[in-house]
Length: 225
Length: 54
Length: 151
Image (tube, rainbow over all chains, first blue to last red):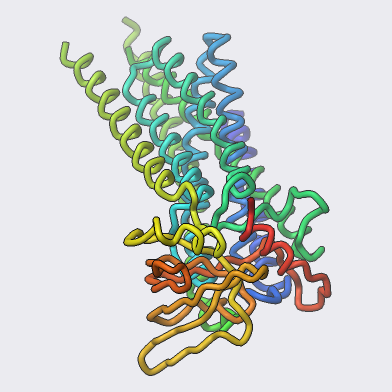
């Protein structure tokens, strides 16, 4: 009985992973190259998906943080901790893929414009959350402190998103959600949306599994007392 | 000028998607092995408690 | 108590590091609060910007590019498409996407008459448009202009 529940979870993760890989296959080998950028634009399918994933992780972190302030249940803390970790991973991936894409197109790996800088800050805040969490033993204090930071972190996301609209930046303005509709050819648009969805679903699976692992860890620690 | 050649694009594509692949496979692997390890430890702890009822 | 002390140190250390890096990032952003000037702004402010490395964004004027591969001298003119032009002198191979009619952000020192810039870094700024080769739609220059010459 125990095994089959974990197996189901495992196979779900495997399936989600394969959907992501199928999107990448399309991104690299099926959709045509871009008129101006040629082949290198294909990084967009990975870069934008990672960015949306980390924004969503911040939103989820905020929800779990609010829930953990209202209820003492451990589960919200584990879910929050897991969301912050996954958020950090995808922020780093966003920054790295963006940097790799920036070098052959903009000509630089990095610049301190508003979009890049605020995204970096988001990553640092996620890391700060993890540091803060590990500084406290299990309990109310940890719950409160993390929750406050967890709520704060999401406040960065609208700023990051709007940064390319509010300020002059090297990074280009939004491609998907904009007045007048997206500026992507249809085949690019469909694949980008599929890439975003599949990455988001995979990240939700990551968060769920990690949270359960944290709960298991906690259970073991309680049993061992 | 004005265009990123395929030759130039290739290392960047490999780097980006390679790192993406490594990250999600690596993290997935970590999660799965951590789960297996924790389940095993929990079982051991439970066995220990059953062995010495104090 | 040893454990409490360790925790306090961790918290303080964590907050200090996070705070320091945020402050650094914000400060960096602060210096570039005007991330780049338009050609008009830069030429008007040129006298006050002497000695400061600034960024100026504009469109590469068609017909103005002079590239000497032997000594890596790149000369071109940027324009705001409304009459203000600045001559750029750059040393080094330009990015792949650099060409006449593309958007650029140059970093460097502006002359006191605001008519030329000695550039130490050349970045291409492109629009948010991504088109398949068969797609005829083309808003690129319009979008690029909006993004370059904002405000």
